[in-house]
Length: 376
Image (tube, rainbow, N blue to C red; front, side, top):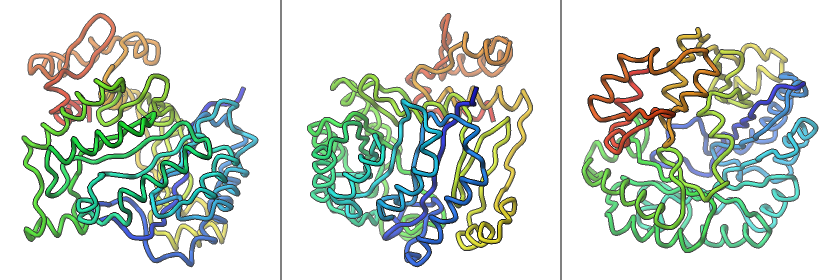
C-alpha cells in the first residue's frame, strides 16, 4: 500500500516583490521560467513520487499564476497518476496575473482550490505595501473564478498594516464576506528585516498600528467571521464547515509532505530538509543531475523532538491537541510527558486542559508565541 503524502511545489517568480515579503521569490527573472519548470519536472522524476499516494497538492510561491497555465499543466501531468481520487489541489494567485482563460485552464487540469492574495480592499493600503493590483482587479479575478466553476476559494487578508485603521479592516471584512468565499485567511503583518517595508518603518516613512490596536483588529476579525458562520480552526484561518485547508491541516498534524522546487521544504521519515534558495544554482544542479547538491538537512528528529513539535504545531489550531490522538501516535500521555510546561502555561491562563484536549485560552490566542516557545 502506498504511503499518503502531501506535495508542495514552489514557484518563486513574481511581477514585483511586495514590500513585506521575505519569502524566497524573485522579480525580473522571467528568462528563467522555462528552465525552472523543466528543473521542477526533473526533480519530481528524481524523487520517485510514484511510490506515494498524493493526498494534497499545494502550488505556492512567489506568485504561481505568473507562469503560463501550460507550465502548471505540465507539472500536474507529471504527478497525475499518483494523485488520490479525492486530492485537494490548491494554487495561489494574485490579481493582475490571471484572467478567465487561465482560471478555466486551471479547473480543466484538476485544480479545485484557489487561494487569492487580496490583503485589503483599500487601494491606498495596497499601494503602501507594494501590491500590484487594485481591489477592483481582485473582484474581476474572483468573479471569473466563480464563472468557470471554481467553488473552493480562499481569500487572504492582512491586519496590522501601515496606517491601517480598525474601520478600514471592518470594511474589508464586510466586502469580502459579501462575496461568500469558502475560506478566509487573516494574517498579522510580521515586519521582517531586509524587506522594503522594514526600511520604510525604520526611517519613519510608514507607521504601524500599535500592539493594542493590532490585537483589537484580530478579535474584530474573529468575532465578525464567526458571526457569519465561519469556523475559526487555526490562529489565522477561518472556513465554512468542510472547507478547512486539507494541506495545511495535515502539516499541523505532523503528516509527511514532499517539497519540490527552490527553497521548498520536506518532512519525511522524521527528517526535515529543504532545497537550497539560490535559483540559478538549483537549476544548474538539476541540469547536471547533481540533485543531492540542492538538499540541505535541517533536522533529524528524535522521538522527543517529534513530541515537542507535535505540541507546537497542534497548539496553532483552535481545537488544540487531541489527547487520545497523541497517545495513539506516541504511546504516552502528553499531560504526564509535558506536565511542567502544562502546569506553567495553565497557571498563566494561556492553556486549558479538559478531558480530551489541550488548547489555547483567549489569553493564549494573544500570546501564542509564549506558548509555542515552551515546546521549542
